Length: 540
Image (tube, rainbow, N blue to C red):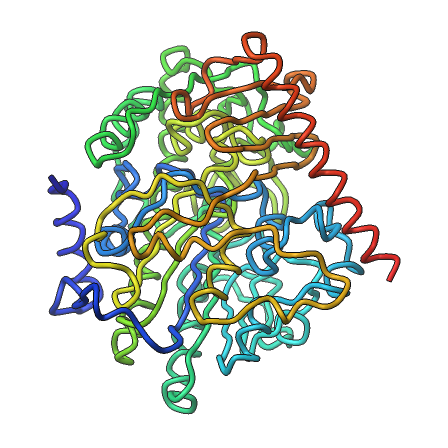
């Protein structure tokens, strides 16, 4: 039975986007026979359960509407960090194959081809708006292959952008007092490009890459949207986490256990001067809520309000882009995929223009980060955060919407088969009917698998191992088994059966020594092969 909250969300989305029709027509026999438009929407530091359709209390009616009419994936993964995930998404390769984590500017362009370039070769027009952060492709139009691009390269400001370009040309800084909010601006530019597409290139399909910086730190949002969530988080992260877990089950997700808070883990990435700038009110560990003072509770709850407001604003911006596509008569034949580049962040730092404690929290002169306590809520029910290869760092919500290409009998369903960002490029290629002949001679085969069969309600192509490595954190999933290690735990390999324990609560390494030996050897084989791929590309 479908959740009442969904229908409320859909009705709200219809009002927000000006649509007079909630549902989109379609039938199993009406699968599109032409090349579809493709829109990839990527959030930044969004937790697994931060959307209404993934258990959240945050208002996300437009994304919830896509979920109700499309397919949600419950076992989809990213690369745990901004640049690594973006490189994988656009190229179809693991970042380790391209010397892209840490980034090497020389390698990726030598043998990889961005999906935008591949699609342009097939007659598409390509548009980008938002965060880029793929340093191996220096410029979004020249190197990234987009026809038009608004690139926001300022990761420290939402109101007063200092570093942004359009079509590789630097734009003026945004002055204080200007009516600019990054999330809205990102949507505005994509809408502008789509209007131009409709006017000048309506005979061609389009590929859009809409990459928001929300809800990445610094936590900033319009005050009226922040105020909308007054009192919402006063009960604290543990109470809210249980509510999200209950809502996930109510929506049909598996009855996962919840991960425990790990108060022994300090907030990472703490820059010099952070403690002095924020003062004693901040807490750097996911401690028990009731151990905080009343002032600290209010401060933490306010930060989560801002996080929620940023997601709320992003959903509205997505709704405006959807309205534009609908106005073009193109929505039914547009594949929209929504994902996050990593889990919610436990980082606490101050950089950019610094933090002014005298201004309202969430305004342009403040500099706040979510921190471990509420990041544990955002990633619920999973363990740990962005940067780690535990599920909280790498699990992403993934919504696929395509009225003419997804069997309508699947509307609102949850697909539990594993997938990864490296699967997006082969899926798009499969859907538009092209093979990998675009690959340069020295390029290795694409490591991902198409998940297009999931749109028909069929079992997806057999998925091999999914590889993870980032900043000393390591992991691999093969079927239901997963190994993971972290410098936080002295690099000891842990073993979990994710079918029974997705939240990684019971380490089975001692119980199944042969299994962990088998999987760790396989992980090493994959890492060695990726290192060879990167080395060979450099040698040529």
